[in-house]
Every structure is written in C-alpha cells, then in structure tokens.
Image 1 (cartoon, rainbow, N blue to C red):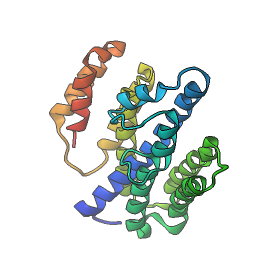
Image 2 (tube, rainbow, N blue to C red; image 1 turned 30 degrees about the vertical axis):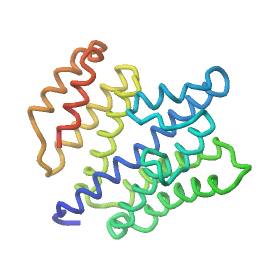
Image 3 (cartoon, rainbow, N blue to C red; image 1 turned 60 degrees about the vertical axis):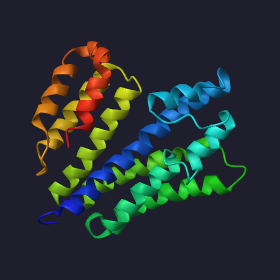
Image 4 (cartoon, one colour; image 1 turned 90 degrees about the horizontal axis):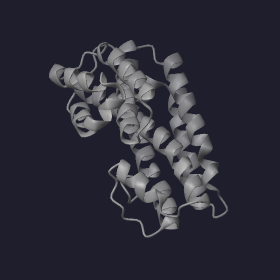
Length: 224
C-alpha cells in the first residue's frame, strides 16, 4: 500500500471494528437466545443494557427480528455487517477480491435468512465462519503489514470494548488488551499515551478493574 492516507486508515480501522462487532455480538446473541428460549423471555433486556443499546423492542420476538435483520436499527447485526461491507468495498484493491468475497458471503447469509420465513436463527452460524475465513485470508492476501495492523488494531479495540461490557472473565480481557497494545505500537497513527497508561493502570487491578469499569471504557474510547 505504501503510505496510507488518513481516509484509508480510517476505513481499515473501522473494517476491523465492524467485522469484530458482528462476530462477537452474534456469538453473544446465540447465548442470550438460548436463555430466552429456555428460561427468560426478557433476557434480551440485559443484553441491550450491557451494550448500551436502547431497549426499543416490544418483546422477545421483536428483538430477535429487528436486532438481527433490521436495516433501520443502527445497532442490528445487519446494519453493522453492511458497514463492514461498505468499508471493505472501498478497500477492494488493498484486500483482494478473494478476501472481500468472505465479507460478501457473510452479508449474503444474513440477507438470505432475512427473506426466508423458514430460516432459523442458527442459520446465521456461517456468518461467524465467513468472518473467520476473512481474517485468515487477510493474513494470506494482504501483503502490506501496516494495513493489516490497522485492521487488527480496530478489531482488538472493538473486542476489548465488547468483552468489558459483556463481563467476560478477566483473563480474556487481559489477553485482548495485550493483543491490542501489540498492534497499536506497530501502526503510524497518533494515540493518547495518557489514556493508554490510565487503562493499563485499571486493568492491572485484575478482577478489581470492574469497580472502575466506566473509567476503563472512557479511557479506551479516548485512545484515538
């Protein structure tokens, strides 16, 4: 890629964020979906609250339909997959057609399930598989290390944000923080050292970081 423009770096970064957002929120959706089927019709409310999503859904069925498929809901899986696709299309030349094809396949899977009345929620499992393939193809087809690192920096920042919100065990959060730092130090994009130090200090508390969760999230948001 050579020297990466600010605009292109932004698309790379957000491609990483949106693909990870779809992957992790869909993974967690499946868990909450099981709870809604087996135990608690209102489990989706807790899911929304953790992710700071407005609870605009009338009931379980409305949540399942709109959160998965609504183009009008900015927080839906479909909306985030479309944003990932839009960024990927702009980066077609950098990513290669093979790499881009997995983003297209993930989007096609969601759209297929949306229009087929007999489709099941678990028919969306291939979306996760396609995103795994996208990340693997990215390593194989994108020669420019800077571009790969920017995408992965966005990916790990998004994953860390979601893991913190969704109360993942501390070892998972620590692992993703280290992966994010590794990529952040390899890209030529300015960041706020004070916010990195602030978040590092909170996460060094181990499980005690949860008492300062909002501070940690604020620091994460302000790194770039």
